[in-house]
Length: 307
Image (tube, rainbow, N blue to C red; front, side, top):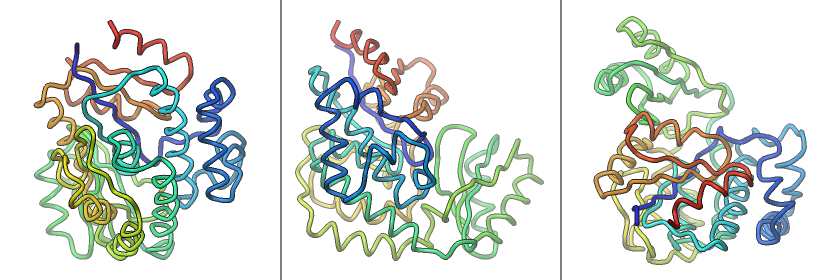
């Protein structure tokens, strides 16, 4: 039996209509959307399935994403398919925590609704920004960030040749210019509402920590790779602190995938909208098998896991 990891995308993968076919075809998926809507006092079906101007706003996106992934997971769990390890990119880490038995799904949805609101409110519009850096060595990007005046840091280590920087707009722009001079293939400003995973969001993390104190955190049933450390977490102790720090810390996604590969993971199953995580895994190690579950018909791909 091959060693399987369930991996989950973060904010930015959302699209109108995500999860609709799961809602329409499976009662366990329908229950997730309906219960999440009741919990948050909003029409989750309208938010996820119909054209609207809220889905791409951080304070709504995060709850919509985790609800959708949770609905997909509900069906996959009913099929009896379980991973040996889990991980998620940024917001996706909450889905990994649900998979690992650390968080109840509805506690996770409640927390990410708050997380999205805190991140949206943390920095006034126009103060912070982010940019993707393509085709530049990690060490060079880190050095440029350190040498740039103002706040700018590496927000995401996605895969070889793709990093994201985040911080004050002027500092991000200055670092972007320097990286282009040094030979970066491309530096692309991102259309985001804040400087996520930068020190500017430290206060948002501290506020989230207060809510985490009132949330049941269970010992992981399977290990999960944490964004902040890229190490396996096997104890409930310290998880709240990791989640609070995650908002303002770098997402070490490449390192998380490398950690799972070193542990013998052969198949990565991406569950959620889009194929972002699948593409990152392939760029990290082309020899690994990647399965993407975004639509109901994708469930057929899981048959190979029971062979």
